[in-house]
Image 1 (cartoon, rainbow, N blue to C red):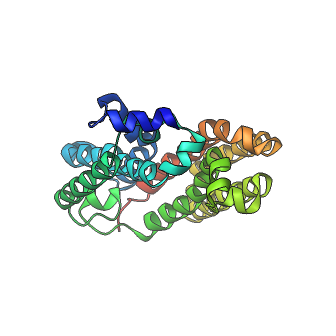
Image 2: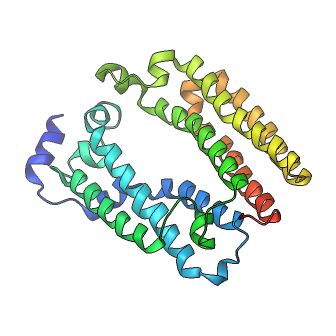
Length: 261
């Protein structure tokens, strides 16, 4: 802690590399992927409005997701000082209120970019310039619900710090084993609902592909549940990939339905 305090005292401006670390580029993939899934589901050719696709990618990834990471690190700076003292803010490489200022500036930038995209409900709505079809909204909502399980697993890395500082995350409240089981159920059930919907829409092959991906996640979940605290980061880099792959499969299924109503 004395080293961290010294860094905060000596440094007035953040290190450029630390600022990039604060925005966590590795986390941008998932929201960008989700945006692209919506774009595909619209049934509109990407080449018809490439600038909208590019603007949405930048907004979803570097701007909104990057801003959320800065906000998260700012709000969790006391917990991170216990769990991961080498992170940009607790280490002093991003000193003072720079983390907060970065988040505020990026929030303003997100609003400006959002205005350029128009009424922004989903990527499908942006590209097709109209309200998304009920099928698109239903599938997007189901995958959003399932993402809650992914976020629960993400909380495992801060388990000790959360306990010490009184943050009642699910892993703290339920314990690692029960929280992991809840996360698995929350991830699987919406995907089963997506499979059922695609079957109802007559998209049998797409539903089958997602079923295979769910089965693969089931095997990964068995590994996760054998030691949730240690295996959660592993699952986030394996099982989650199968989850988001299913999103794109569903997007192509919806494209086959015409995407937009």
